[in-house]
Length: 179
Image (cartoon, rainbow, N blue to C red):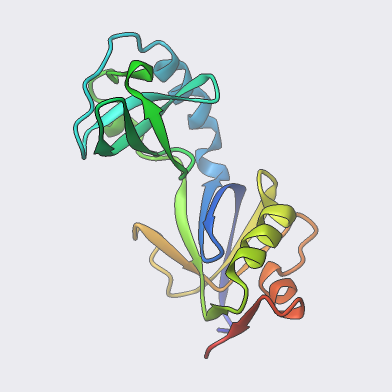
């Protein structure tokens, strides 16, 4: 690890894999409620096309999503503001207001933990979920990290008590360092 680190705080929104985490950074948290209000107002049915954006229903609410694969009865949607990917029935997809993505970009950032290799990927995923999902976290980034990249490489993820999630995974022998 480098001697100079940058610390960012946020909420762990989704854990896709043990090394692919989606974080809603604090500076973007207020925007989520505003975006959600606009998306919830969507009512015009949409015909899903891969690569295009839609309002899609997940657990009873509408969220911004990108169509990954369109089917006859449902489509595979990647939810931009949370990071999860789900199948959504066609009757639960609606057109987004024009310009919503331009005025408010995706509100989560994809992050990966630097230098870790899974020993038991499923158990590591479960432990990260147990420790931090939907809770405050702190990202420790090296000084040279480019936060403008699509995915941020993270030196470490600290839980709300300030404990290293990476070290916890290593102690449990779920991952190991490869550097």
